[in-house]
Length: 473
Image 1 (cartoon, rainbow, N blue to C red):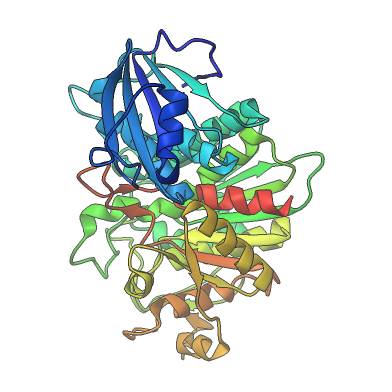
Image 2 (tube, rainbow, N blue to C red):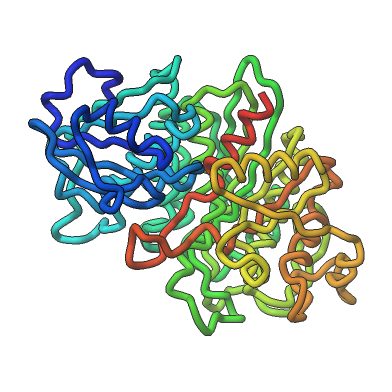
C-alpha cells in the first residue's frame, strides 16, 4: 500500500476519514467541514465511536478518538476502517488528520489502517476483499511525513508477517518452511543466514534442541539470521521459541491442541522484528536465532525421565515432554551467547500457562537480571500497548529445578510459580550473561480480537522491540 502525502485536492476521494478528538469536535468540524453542524447526541468524538455523513461530493467518516487516545487505541480505531467499514471504500480514500496529533499517534493510525487489509481467510474459495489497488491520500502535519509514513508502512508489513506466520496452519508453517522464510528474507535484505540441520546440530552439541524434534517427520532446523550495520551502537541478540506445532509429546495435551500452531509466536515475533530492523536500517548489530521444531509423537519421541544433553554442557532430566519450549530455548540462548557475545540478550516464548494465570491476556511476564533492560522493555511496551510486568528471579526458585540424576530438570511438577521456575531454567543456560531478559508471551501472542471470529496472531513483541531499540539509539 502506498500513501500519497498531502494531496492538493480531495475531489477524487469518495471516502474521506476525519479523526476527531473529543475536546476538539467543534474546532475540527469548523476546520474540516465548514458550515456543518452535528448534534453531540449523534456524534461527540468519544472513544470508539463513528459517524457517517455526506458533504458536498464526498462521503465522510468521522472517527472518535476520545480525550486522550493512546497508541493501541488509535491503531485499532484505524484498523476498523477497512475491516468494519469496507462497504464505504471503493478505489480511493483520504485520511484527513487534525494538526494536533503527535507523530506517535500518526504512526499508530497509519499502521492500524494497513493492518485492516489483513485477513485469515487464506484458503477460502472466495477470498476477502482486496485492497491492493486502493489509492490512499494522507494529510500529515508532521515536519517529516515521508519518514513517518515509511516507518509506519514497515511496521505494518512486519506485524502482518508475524500475523501470517502464526495464523497459517501447521502443515504450511513447518521447521523447513521457517528456514526457507529466513533464507528468502536474507536474500531480499542482504542478511547473513545459517540453517543448521540435525547432523550439524549434533556436532554443535545442540542435544536439547534435537531431543524435542526427534518425534516428528518434519526435520528440525536451527535458524540464525545476522543483520550488521557499519555504524552499530550495540549488538542485540534475539531468540524466539519456534515450536511450529505442539502435541505435548508423550505427555500429550488433553485440551486446547487445536491452538498449538501458535506455539511459535516467539519465533514469528523475532523473525518479523529482524525484517523490520533490516528494512529500517537501524544502526545496530542484530543476531536472531530460532530453534524450529515440531513436538510430535512417534517411536523416536523423547521420553519422560530421559536425561539429555545441551549445548551449555548441562545434563537435563526430562520430567515433562510438554515443557519442550524451554529445552530448545536453552540451546538457542547458549549458542547465541557463546558464539556471538551480544551486548543484550532477549528471548520471547509462548512458554507457560502460569503466565496467563498471573496476568491473563493483558500482559507478558518479564524476567531480567538487568534493571535497565527490564525498565526499557516495560517503558517501550507501555507506549505502544504491548505491556509486560516483571516477576522475580530469586535464587530460591532455582532449587525447584534441582534434579537427583542430572544437573537440572525441565519441570518442577508443582502447581505454583510455573513461569518463574521456567525462567530460572532458562537462566541456567545464559552463561551468566549480565543483560538478559525473558518475555513469556503465552497470553498475549495469540488472542481473541474484534477483527476475527477465532483467536489470531497479535504480533506481540514486534513493535515493542522496535521501540526499545529506538530508545537506545
